[in-house]
Figure 1 (spheres, one colour):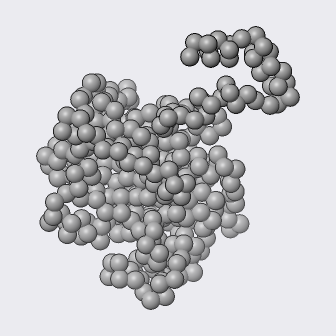
Figure 2: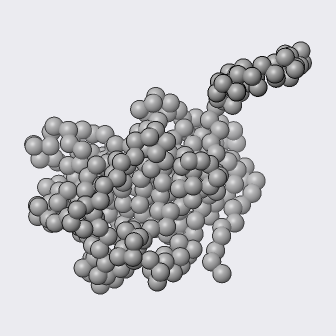
Figure 3: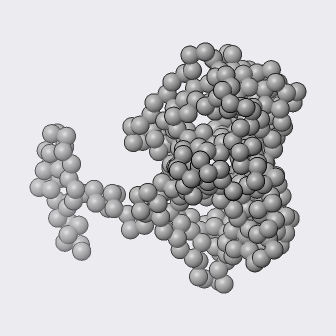
Length: 371
């Protein structure tokens, strides 16, 4: 082994490497260790953002930025510290494949319509009265609702109500940017006008997952909004049985016309971790962003304890050991890049087999809070 290392460090090899680099060529014999890892080594790191920080900064932003002042969207994205300096797309990434943000719209404001190749989703956390309009359908948003906007669809927001509204945005921006597929177009008349009745798709699916016969052929977005009332009913039915040992009582939002994830490149779940639940540890190649809709508890990620409460966000990078513990009944919304990993046939999962499936806590995360 020493002889091999000495050879690669010899003058003849080093001189040849420099020679071919001058022709914009590269030596694979040097690059293999960096290109072909034995297992995933993500640059994204586990991290947690406290609701107190996010809310404070959104309120401060509301005094500076408005949709009419060139901002279009008053949104603050969750910057993963491990990706901050990665070019060209790491500066706006929560995981290596996904972007997440918190967005605020105030009464009387309008965020103009636009469309882009990136797919988007929204999980509504605070307030009521605002609507998003997607392909001519006004969808009035309520807390706990999950909304989708697959790539290429016109969408904008407006708020005729009387209280601030906040929601989580998630998009596949890093993925689309990295493969060179970014397109963006502003709507010509500020905001799209309705072409179907308000909450049209949700009314078509008032019976839950009993789909209209016209939707038995695949459509990109037959259902634009998944109402909290139906989500909680599904979880309550599931909770009569034994929980999943890793994720408690979890349901996935799907496209009712094809059975796949509701958003093509992002999978989204709502899960209930009942009080006292202590999940077992596992890891997978898909990365996940969590938003704590209700409750309190903690998640151990690669041996570090991350305490969370209502409103907090935290990220589990790909191939990171993680397990959840609920100190009270807790609802976690999550979005992951599972569909991307499955499309490339690299999705793998591994169960933690030591210490009865639980990690040893070696450290505790200390969040940043506003002064």
